[in-house]
Image (cartoon, rainbow, N blue to C red; front, top):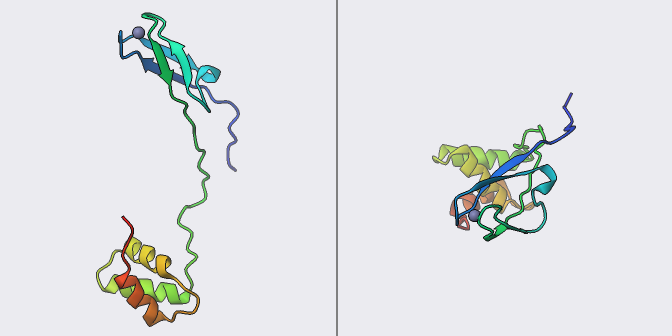
Length: 116
Ligand SMILES: [Zn+2]
């Protein structure tokens, strides 16, 4: 079974860059959607406190193999050319077309220019 989150306890310590005071915001005080404007409790310097967010990751493995037979063959072929598995997958998935046969996939995957 997967545990459900029942309650989140959160403290964040902030540092005033003006007087170096540490001050703490707890739970609902911590901004979530928008910047919070608050004066430093010690020196009264106006401070912008950036919102934070959390992403709860599911436990499902991220690596979902949805490659079909042809893609898998092309990936294997690229690996035999010296590409890492991840690199081969990235390339083949990027250029995958339904009407391409395996040799086309391999050719296009090898010449594929990755966006940087
Ligand atoms: Zn301060």
